[in-house]
Image (cartoon, rainbow, N blue to C red):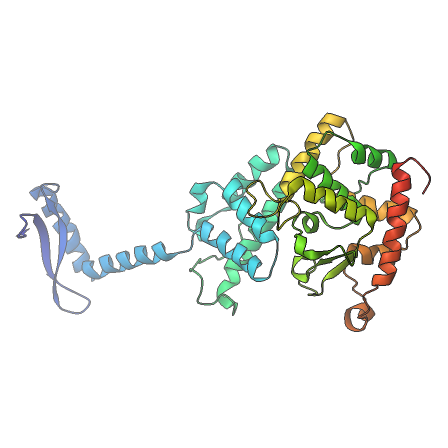
Amino acid sequence: MVVAPSGARTFFLSYTSPEDGKRKQVALGRFPNMSLREARLKATEVREQVDQGKDPAFERRADIEARMAKRELGTFGDLLDLYASDLETDGKRTAKEVRRITAKDIPSALLSRPAHLLTRDDILDILTPIAQRGALVHSDNVRAYLRAAFELGLHAQSMTRWRGRTKDFQITYNPVATVRKSVSRKPRGQRNLSPDEIRSLWQTNQLTRPMHLALLFILATGQRVEEVLEASWSEFDLTQKLWTIPGERRKNRNKTSEPHLVPLTYLHIALLKAIKAETGHDAYLFPSRTGEGPRRYDSLNHAVRRFIEASGMVTFSPRDLRRTYKSVAGSFGLSLEIRNRLQGHGMTDVGSVHYDRYDYLVEKRAAMMVWTRSLRRLLKGKKP
């Protein structure tokens, strides 16, 4: 027993190391937590290890180093954060969704667990509650994100982007790979509003004014929901009757950095003036409740759900208004090519990608005028 200056009394065993032949000692325990009898029994166990050629000090040091290394292992939360950062580096909007899912759908107990310890059952524990509340498509979306995150963890150290910059995950397999999808095939959107439904939506008073104007502007311009909700006033030139959507805000921004030019007509300008009068924000057309940023897609989605419940209209989503624009504009005689150009679809043919630099603004202005004139007649119940 060794008595420290503080008065602490500790049992030690001295021995000659079979590893390097040096005299060493190893702590057995502290008195009175360990009795003398227990210390003698422990000393006998350690002596047997020495007789078998093992160095207790070396074994203990290796165990401490292993625990320290384990402490440095990346957790599941670290893995999801890495995946979101990877998406952000590529400019992917889904990074926000991954972070939202991490906060909402992943149990905190799993987030703190080392990523390599997660099993197929753990993944099922995440997905099953989502699927059982009826959100089958969302369950499959979460599954896809988790599978991609583990794939990144598997290969992060072989990627120049992340080599040496991430924690060691020690992932040897993807636990999501054997988890079946909730639905065999994600349903494609088919919903578009009929002329009667368009008139009902345009004239309703069952939506808050900002959300109603947002839906009308999506339908009137044919642009994407996020492009409308996140639009800023600086993008609009009412003198030139032009909305310039910056390349970095476009869905296909990774394929092109070119801005999308949306011609405006008297109908759009009237809606913009109504939006300005309603929201009164200096930066955004549709500011969030705090005013620090634009509205999220979720807020408009919730508003549409409440409208459907109140009106009894067949279920639709804000994105279906873009499909409605495409379908109804076609019935007005606008060609598919000009509708695609008005809506900012990526033109993937060789000529468009590599050679054609014409902006088609004149043609788009003429087509947009046909659309708004015909839409006004439709709203009045007349034949376009």
